[in-house]
Image (cartoon, rainbow, N blue to C red; front, top):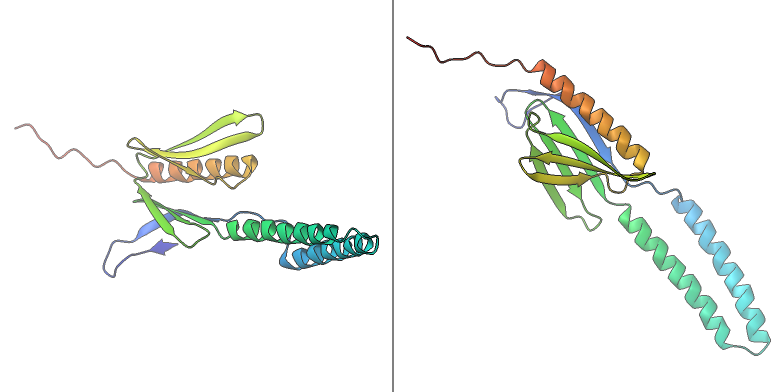
Length: 175
């Protein structure tokens, strides 16, 4: 795939392109079904306590449903986060869009870029891009296996770029 920023610019070959999104196992339809079941059980339980004369318990059952709904909404909101990685011969561009829509962008020169996969615990790691004293953790919402796979793919793409770049001949001459 070839890309350009402006007409007439030299095209840079893209070696890697990825969009990272947090995984959510419960679909919106599953959320509605789950909340309906929880609300139904809470209503039946609350009515039983109401009929037994313990009317304040009905409010606590309603509060439980409301808090569960709120927690799921926060979880779904955090799923709007996106990270994109675009590696071409001249740069690696990392764009991060937060759940609130705030976007940030970082650029790295591929020749100086280092990819570190720090092992923390048996099933935990951290993927860090490093260049010129700057560190940027990426894929924080991915599983440890997914981060390891991403690191391997990025390293492979970087190696392909570095092997395709020919060193320029020396222009200095002694006369």
